[in-house]
Image 1 (tube, rainbow, N blue to C red):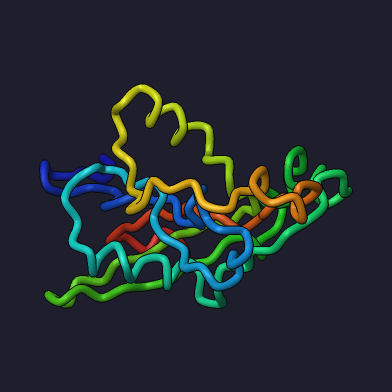
Image 2: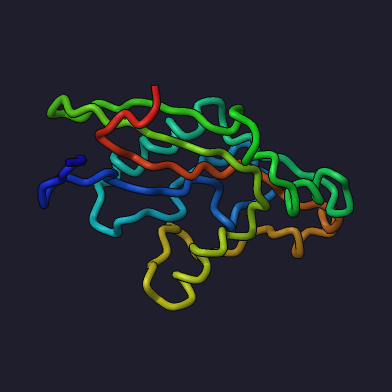
Length: 170
């Protein structure tokens, strides 16, 4: 006998990826708010629900900055796996709903290039099964538009977060 779940019982309520919009103005990356880039399951969430989650995923701000495209740090971001081997890149938070239900956010943080979406998100958008969560489709001030930043890339942590009613970790 093991755990059994009823039809309404779910191991998790939501999976989301939070970070900076890929169309962010690189002149203001450190002042830009993070937001959900991907949410599963796809359903109608209230604006307040979506607005509060990134504040828990980024309690110390977005951590965005510019780095040189030809730097060792860029190679580490592109090819490294330090996020897999360090507990500094994971954390847990709790939320309490209006009906006093406690939810746990289990998160992993990984520094990524801002203008590149995670592969699975990009694939879902291309096949049309994911509508854009971006409120604006303006492509403003990308590094291609601004010669001063042509040798730099904007990087920022992205947080991959599972929201559950169950405390998987202590």
